[in-house]
Image 1 (tube, rainbow, N blue to C red):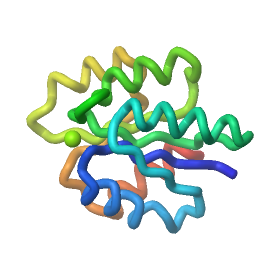
Image 2 (tube, rainbow, N blue to C red; image 1 turned 30 degrees about the horizontal axis):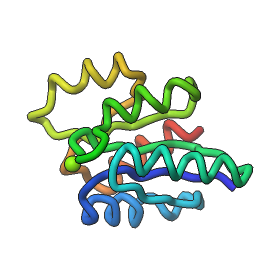
Image 3 (cartoon, rainbow, N blue to C red; image 1 turned 90 degrees about the vertical axis):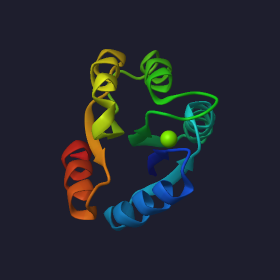
Length: 123
Ligand SMILES: [Mg+2]
């Protein structure tokens, strides 16, 4: 079983991302911050399953997106991490790239646009 993790502190964003990408046939898991995501990733791996992709917000309480990527990359160099960002967060792009982000999705996103970028990274 392959999982896609949707990490955002906004339930609305998590639900809309999940709704958009569920047709790809992956198991979707939601996490509300980076720490929650790392815990869910550990659970998934413990069960013998794989992470196909992470979609991650930048600004979140408890553990932000950049810190999450840094932590995740300590043990996983290859699984794509797409960062959800707003136009006004341009300075986060270079921080994200340094941390090991694979690509970017600008909020607000069109469903077709999101699907296209996700399909590109899971192939
Ligand atoms: Mg946020």
